[in-house]
Length: 120
Image 1 (cartoon, rainbow, N blue to C red):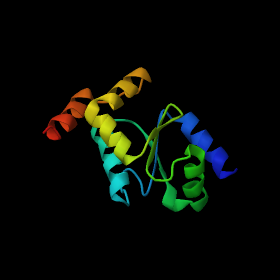
Image 2: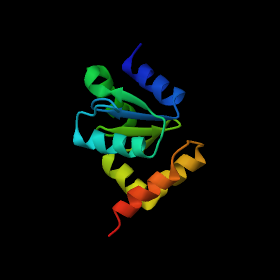
Image 3: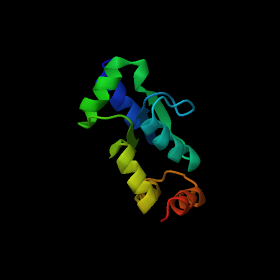
Image 4: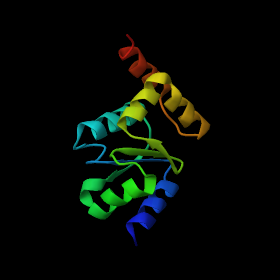
């Protein structure tokens, strides 16, 4: 199986997928840790793919999405963005909306707590 086929299978067979450095329980970079932390805190059930475990997937995901950096979040097969985009979407409430529109379960109260903690 090619890396592209493996990536496509992963993003289409899971509602939410995070391609990251490390795992959701042990992230191995700050950006991956931030996105996994948001998803974990919000109670989102997501598949994690450790790109450090497979160089073909690490390069392949960048080509698949035409996005140069890791982490990369996919919802219902659609590329959403990396750390900065997910952070902005979380703080604006756009991520909540995207989860709601796609039938992805999450803890709305937890999402609100993230926004409250980051309010100026």
